[in-house]
Amino acid sequence: MNRTNLESKPLPCATTCAITPSTIATDPTVVPKISLLDILRGSKTAVDQLWASLIHRGYFLLCYDAGTPISSVSPTLGAIIETVEGMKSVLTPNTANWPPSQCSVSSGDVYFNERDVPMYRLGYDDGTGGEGGDKDKIREYFRVANGNIPGVGGWREWGREVVRGTCFCSYLADVLLHQTLGPKRRKPKRSQRARWMEPESIDLEEPSSGGVEGGDFSILYAMNYFNTPSSISHASSPSFTGSDGRPLSLREHVDPSLFVIEPVVGRAVGGLEIWDKLGGRWVAADGDGAEAIGCLGEGEDCMAVFVGKAFERAWKSEKSNEPEINATLHRVRQPTKGEIGRPRRAVIYEQKYAEYFE
Ligand SMILES: [Fe+2]
Image (cartoon, rainbow, N blue to C red; front, top):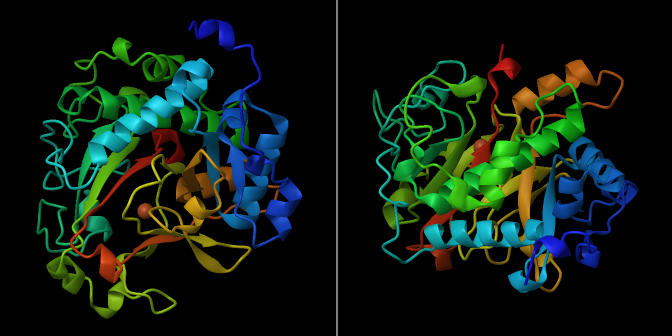
């Protein structure tokens, strides 16, 4: 079937996406869900939902209809489904397919962030990685640079599916930035959209060396929480206890970034919990039994999105007449009894541009 001819047809969206901005702002029992396709198309309703979610809830889910055969949907929806499936296949637990591809850039390598600070000094790990390393005993992580960051490695090491996922997240995050902070900000990059829509066009050699391209420090992390008895015992100190007493694998914190996207939420083992401002409670965002998964309609899937400190600052300076948007508190809970011995594998994209850190 020729997909191009289908682009003009109405795009499917599950009815559960139809949550109004005022419901998002006032009803704490409703999970803020927005149509991903409407966001990509710049629909006014979707943008209103976006603002309401960030102001009142601190996060939102971008939902899409994954239950439709790819051959019968628009190119955009087909590319979303293919991208997520590609990332899922790389992260599938209980296979030898980890780390992704032949990646040589691991948690043992030093990554200097947008402020030129080694990440291991920022307190995200437990400090056991030692000087010069940010690996800990609870998780390991691998990084794909969206820009061109020395030391973070080239795309060739990752394989096309993960790079495609990075390009999608980069494009989506730029769309979100554009729709929240306004047209003066970076425009969504056509090149990233092209790489995402047509993955065969990705030149895996392209960002292999050199300086930071255009101040783009954005990173896609592929994370592996070991969830072994040893890793769990390592996270047993009081500092790994949540504000509600829950044992954690990653402390409650806010990210330094602009938008943060978890593009694959539907996996067996979850753990991410996001603080819902209106509800005053933690919302389980990924894995079996998560609230985010439970509120999806038949055949529907979603991505989880929230914001970091750079967005909070930019919003404050750009939208001084609007209510504040604060960086979103989040954490990773410890595995349940049934999850012990089963790793949690997750993808997180953090959008970071140099001009938001100056
Ligand atoms: Fe985080």
